[in-house]
Length: 82
Image (cartoon, rainbow, N blue to C red; front, top):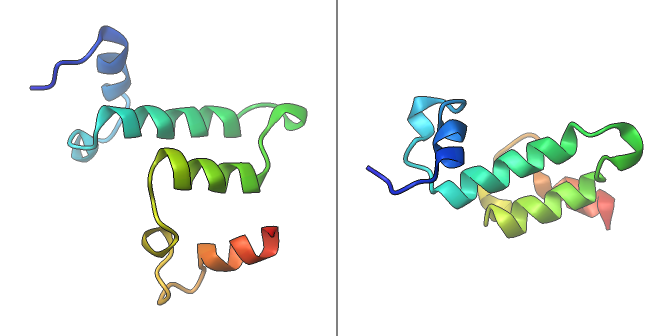
């Protein structure tokens, strides 16, 4: 079992059981990204902000997020944003 706080345990109640092996910091980062995306329009982050958070906080590489064989690639999205 993991040594987790009560708030982290509550967070685990809301995720798919297959994700219980994902490190708590990554789950918390994903939860924060979702929370930011659900904000009202003037306060919602841009897609570029979200891509940056995913790459930094979740440590997901562009290649892992959208392999070259994927019909929709994050690389293409990044090209549009820069």
